[in-house]
Length: 106
Image 1 (tube, rainbow, N blue to C red):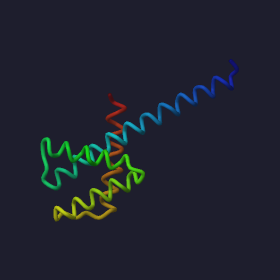
Image 2: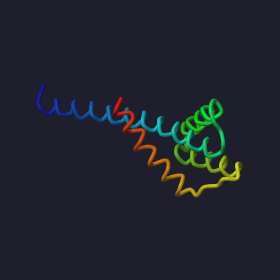
Image 3: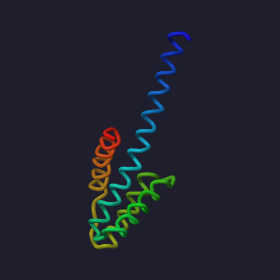
């Protein structure tokens, strides 16, 4: 195997590892986000877990993060606790950092 092929293989392995990490971190972030919003609207225990699962499912739609934000914004509005989109996006991005650290530290 040539040096070029070895470097290519290493790059591909690194890329796959980073993509897997990002996928896991986003899934974890979505769950954490769902749990945080559930707490804000007064859900706890199994009800909060179910709400978090619904947020994770919303992320699987083609809308992705926008779908999550739209769902959560509607739920917060319905609960009489609206939040600005910018505030929700900030929470979502800060939870991605937390989720990534949690995954890396496993």
